[in-house]
Image (cartoon, rainbow over the protein chains, first blue to last red):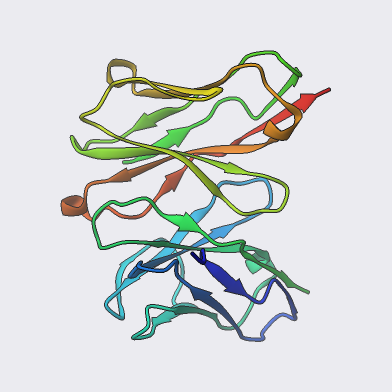
Amino acid sequence: DAGVTQSPTHLIKTRGQQVTLRCSPKSGHDTVSWYQQALGQGPQFIFQYYEEEERQRGNFPDRFSGHQFPNYSSELNVNALLLGDSALYLCASSYTLETDTQYFGPGTRLTVL
Amino acid sequence: AQKVTQAQTEISVVEKEDVTLDCVYETRDTTYYLFWYKQPPSGELVFLIRRNSFDEQNEISGRYSWNFQKSTSSFNFTITASQVVDSAVYFCALSESFYNQGGKLIFGQGTELSVKP
């Protein structure tokens, strides 16, 4: 049973560029959530997708956008990258909108130079 | 407002010692869920336990045990006879009910546990 997968593992970008991160949920899961984890901090909620729609959003600017596909996989897009966007980006999947357990992927380490 | 506080930033113990990680939470909701996750150096968050607000029974799983007390808004985690493989950052998290726009996890700052041989 495959767990949550994310790609790429690492990414280096320069300020002002755009980046797309990808996530495939655990088999049987239909809800995907994205989190940003700065070094030494706890993860911060970015947004959650269900039925291809953004259901809930955290306190992140519009530069952060996402998408969910019919197969439940998801993308996180960040435009106009800032140095402060450097972080570990974690994807989590769960089953239904109920407060079910979220299972996390290995993350994508983004470095903005 | 919802908030999770893990006051212990770092804990260092010697192998076979018992260690307790503290977690205090704040929420106005009557239905909520509490979680503990482990983050080893590889970075992936590993789910350990989920508790709902109506179940105050303590739980034991091998060397791990959890103490949930609504009266003090605490959900503490104890590792008995710690091992070097327990070294990691541990996060406590809170999620409110679906009907109160729940689903997002609110994490504490994490406690870095170092178990020395």
